[in-house]
Amino acid sequence: MTIPNPSLGFLQSLGAPEIFIIVFLVLLLFGAKKLPELARGMGKAMKEFKKATKDVEEDLRTAMEEEPEPAPRPKVANTAETEPAPSPKVANTAETEPTTAESDK
View 1 (cartoon, rainbow, N blue to C red):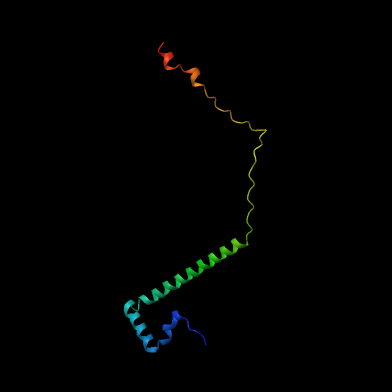
View 2: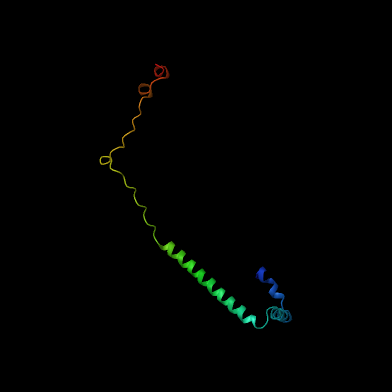
């Protein structure tokens, strides 16, 4: 016993009269001139969708097949060739600036 697809379950109860009524309503809504344009547009949309899906699948396959590039090694600086930056000299403020008592003199 097979279980029918629940999303297409409503199609099992459709008979010829129901399908005829649906086709008639579609013709009334869109008109006979618009139906070929709608069908052509749907065909183009399906073609584009299939093409995009195929491109994505191909990109994924090639990405999975490629081997990752090894990470570049960081360059180690040679300490003998580079000189350390000179440290800034801090002046002793007590020796260079007079105190308030000395400046009053």
